[in-house]
Image (tube, rainbow, N blue to C red; front, side, top):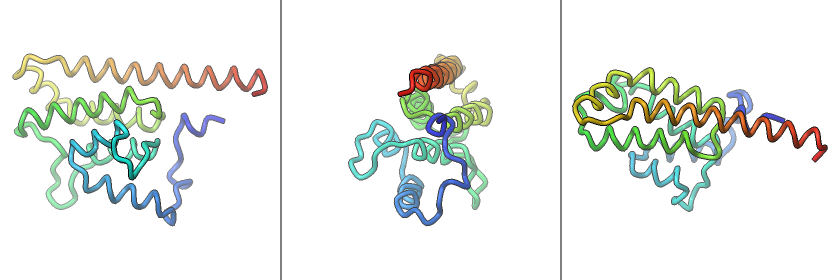
Length: 157
């Protein structure tokens, strides 16, 4: 019943699934602009789904194996940092958000707290509160979806 809201477990994602493998491979090669186009459903090759949102967030959070650097660092250009923050806010407001994606957004905020604080201070921005507000809105949206599905089940539809 709540499979779409909670997201798929890793064991449910078949490694044999060619579409999923192709999506993961494509996202791994995307830059911030391409990821934003994907999230906004402007790439006709792939339709945005729960797995895609999670993969984009995973790409932003996981450190590079070779260089052990994060996707964005404190000394990166302000435009790259801003695009990354805006991408996370877009994901949080997406209608296909899942609990796994919300947990990833929480991890992103924790992982990049130093970058967020420095960016806000240097550029007189309020991304710290924007990110936290978008996270809260995502949690509220999931709660609303859960309530709606529960009511639909009571009605038997």
